[in-house]
Image 1: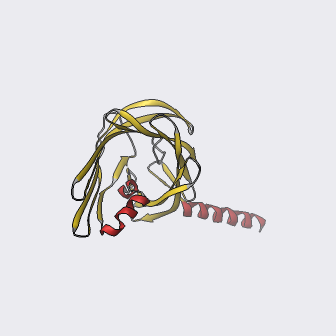
Image 2: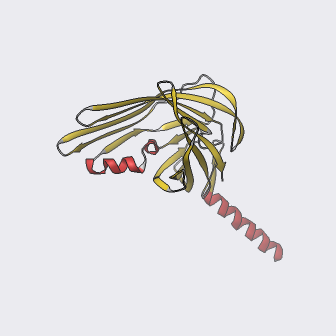
Image 3: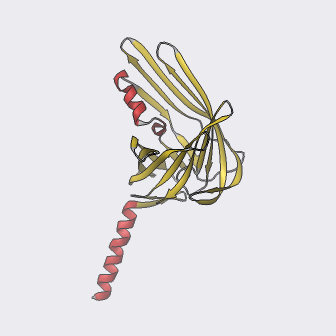
Length: 231
């Protein structure tokens, strides 16, 4: 009887684990888990951090669907922005909702403009290789401010795996893939406002998010971030 009770408890524990943690393409998605990114300005001065938390893991057909809650804190620890979005894993590709590129404050500024968005989501194959090209991603929005039409476009293009490099960050030591891309943004409300940037990110298989990111404009480093903790 005692052995049966122990076996039953073990089974219940395994059922509980399978309900909130799933494996897909080498990634482990566990409810309540997450990671923290430390942010810096172009001179390396800390500007705050981003905290990502896995709120829910579920199955949708052949996909593992992961709901992510993001919160941004300033350098004094005060919460400034929040956002929610999804990731999907089909066993070969991790797809990140391009809505993650628009934060809550930006959405608030669009709220009275009747904006309708369409997305080409961000994709990462489970296996990266130097020289490979990655799919473009974009966010497009159309709306109006009074009688004036409003258009918003953000495109991440020319995504390619440049090299594999040793990387040391607060979260540990990694043999990471360096991925470069171009980011073009345009806001048209009467007249166009454009901004072009270049981004570099470092990733490894099995880690959900970037290990490190760098954003440049006209060759000058504007901001960077580093993975500080996985929990």
